[in-house]
Length: 192
Image 1: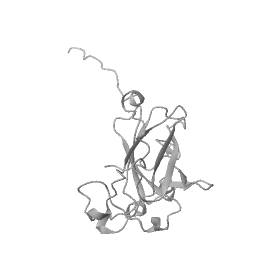
Image 2 (image 1 turned 90 degrees about the vertical axis):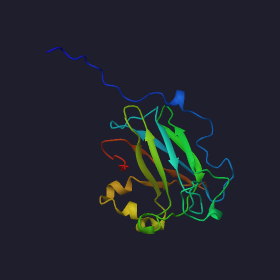
Image 3 (image 1 turned 45 degrees about the horizontal axis):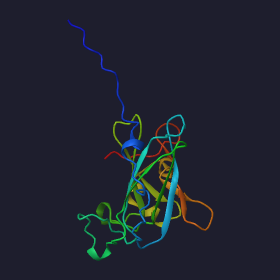
Image 4 (image 1 turned 60 degrees about the vertical axis):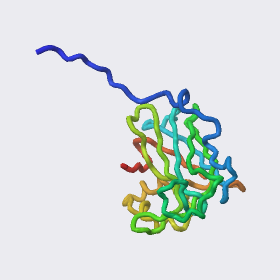
């Protein structure tokens, strides 16, 4: 029997900063959308709690009225906000930090048409991941979190807490959301 050639293991990246950086993609308010302007910022950490300095984060969210800028959203057309696309992309820096400027999303219908709490869908791509990791950002100061069907479906309270962005002290609406890709304090990710 002939020996089979050995192919070395390959991972994705690091190429995000070289191939996918676009100035201003992390600011979803460029079109002057309606709603409360907020900042979501944090760090991406690996399983050793070290910063991921070459991660790419993509967010997708509804506008302040709870309408996605997508033709398949069944909400009325008049809820569209021409100043808001609902999509953003940010890269991490050498310390694993990222930042989005956006608006606080409205509530959207979810499973069984139950209203979901305001949230931002997030996918993270990083060195060593063969596919992106999908999660959600909820706002810790949002009363409707208790009724959200997706957030409520997570049985472990510690895992649920990993999806809550905390408002930082001060007059500006800045929410801190750190992502831990694996290990202790790992962010809850969803299989899609």
